[in-house]
Length: 235
Image 1 (tube, rainbow, N blue to C red):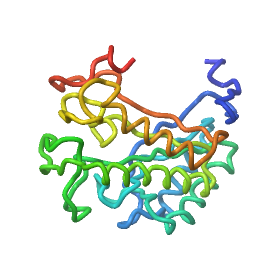
Image 2: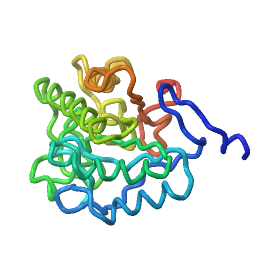
Image 3: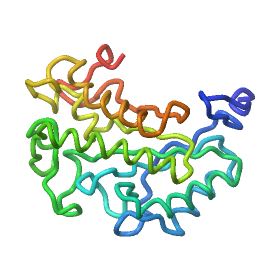
Image 4: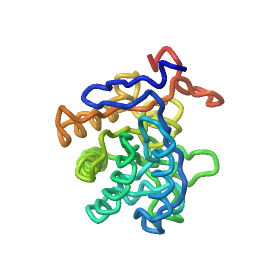
């Protein structure tokens, strides 16, 4: 326990301790995805509680990527002022602030986005809408959207970005052989299935620079998913 309370350096990021508040969706954003006073107060309270790092919840990088109502968004510059207030609310308590960015992929809801969900392959999630199989120009645009979102996060004052590559969302669905049956450069072996993640990571790094932490959350093993990602592939 004592070690958890010791200062810790994460690359260029200095944390006052090793306690992390993990990202959990609150649905406290407004209907368009902007920060609300309730959302800012929620995260400020977590920071005031004494953790060294707060990771703000899954924040969608593309209008087609929203998976729940009242979800935080970062796909446009109009979201930056509110996100700046949110980051400042966390950091005023000596706590580092990171933000998790993602695209819902086949788990996005057309009732929220007005668009058909997108995925590596036209395989619907359980209870979900049939997705559109992404083509190369669309993939390229999504990669750019992640890079632009990472740049907005840095502009807003966040200390780091987490790429959400798990839980069946877009990046994770490309990695998983259960949802990716493509036969092009994005399908087949694990190197191809991870290609989208690598491209997004490189683009994010390009937009934020080498001194800004960017890390990835992925599944280690997909339990309850026949033919899903295995531990051997994840490692």
